[in-house]
Image 1 (cartoon, one colour):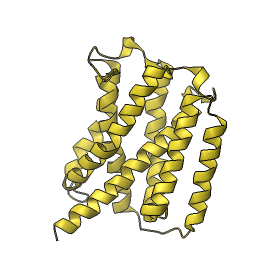
Image 2: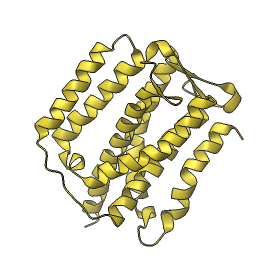
Image 3: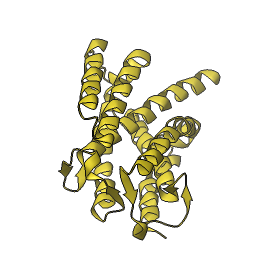
Image 4: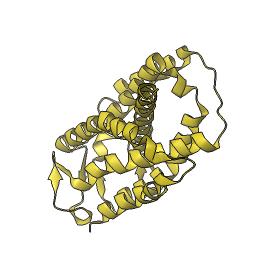
Length: 227
């Protein structure tokens, strides 16, 4: 078993085991989880494959297997399944155990954040990874503020983002310190938190945010269809 495959298993094993816990009953939400993954993950996989093609990053064959899809190792594809499952599990757990609070901020505030991300994206357009990841963050704030501002006002969402950064930091430390994932420093800021590129924090934020937003959409849709 490759190290990256073992890392994927470690990401999903606890959420998977607790999916059938009676209070949260996460297994009942799996259809919404599935469609969230199906909606968001292929877009990021395509970005991932394009980045490999452009030389933004590459994979160390010492820590991965021999099976590839779309120029990506199987373990990298699985990453876009195990991580959303675990992230959405955290979201549901937070939603169950925390009291709901709403932060009342005008949509213009989020439009301004999106605009700043766009401006910085163009400013750093010589660094592929930096530019793209900032632009994707801008897209999230723009789309969410227009179509689903409730998620930006929810304490469940923000708490989940904060909690998710803990396993993200641990997993990315292993990915970048061994390294499993090798970055092209010419395509990024070059600023690292220990061994993790600063851009990875923005990447993780946008990715988890899109998964949660799409998950909420499908969960609401399925609940209405069952009424």
